[in-house]
Length: 251
Image (cartoon, rainbow, N blue to C red; front, side):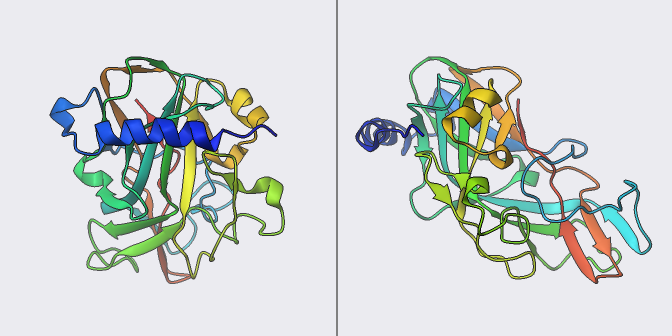
């Protein structure tokens, strides 16, 4: 398995961070905003157990609603001209303490000034723990309560199967922590690439790699789309309120 040179990454990171850390969106050559679509698509990430029955329909005591808030804690945005995500450039890095962004409010997620060009891979380092508040109270869902949702834990990833672990940007394994019922926040990496086969061959795993519809061009403004209407589930049988935001996309 090939690994990224730590020296090279840190060198690129230092240069990019000095440029990006104090940039406002108006002065950045690349701005990434967050947004929700009108509905969710099927998930390929390590989302907790399916919200719907095996027949794809709502079961007894199940109701769907909309998120009034969907917070995602962001760490770092990487871009790479290589589809296997090698030699990444850091667009913006929030450091060891992630910054919470509410996708419902269409926020600016990242802004920076990487070199102009065409990039075939985008890496989003984020917390695996989302926080959702329903837009209205329905079923067992309470609009005054914020519910945590883990997309990567020991319930959906075998903690003894290291081959299935997500990898960080340097291809180091990320061991799953916590459970659906008792989630533990940890950084994970989601990759969007023009060539998923190249990313798999380099060592990234299927649970973290998503097909990128078109290469990212710098300078530009891009949109990270996630969540949507009818993604909040009230289940009276289990007395739970959960969100399944589906598969994120870049547009």
